[in-house]
Length: 184
Image 1 (cartoon, rainbow, N blue to C red):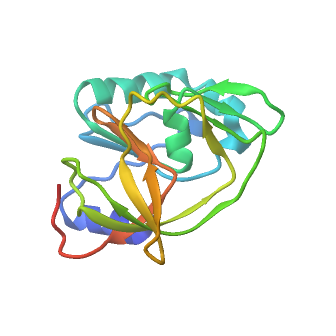
Image 2 (image 1 turned 30 degrees about the vertical axis):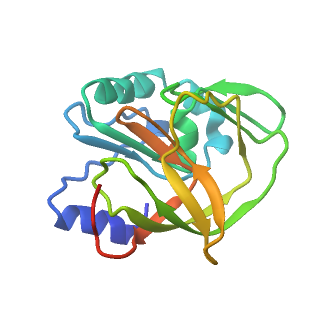
């Protein structure tokens, strides 16, 4: 997570309560929102797969209406499974209908401009960057995309991310808002 984003959330009144999935910790049971930042879940796929209490706690927060947002590695954790470089599938939280795969790595890299049409507590236009080697597989088309994406030159890259109720995420690391600050 970018420190400037956490600082901005804190300045806006958010109480930030960190937790570590790999240390067996779960989000606060009364949290209004759960943020799963980027990381390298592929390096800890077996250990993460065993974090069933974490997955249950995140599911409980989503069922209570809390916003759950996963970014890059956090997005992968929200999916149904993570296929490692050896082709082994590790179960993840199962809150979004997709799996990710490292079995055929391909670099996705670049600055991105994002636009969303949903009722989200963010500016409608955001800036971010993408850096990952995995790809989405076994994606269910029933979940709408989270963003429409352009590269840094304004070329459309199409939809990205998924949203299912209060659970949303994408591979893209949000850096900041762009434009007027008009929120959804």
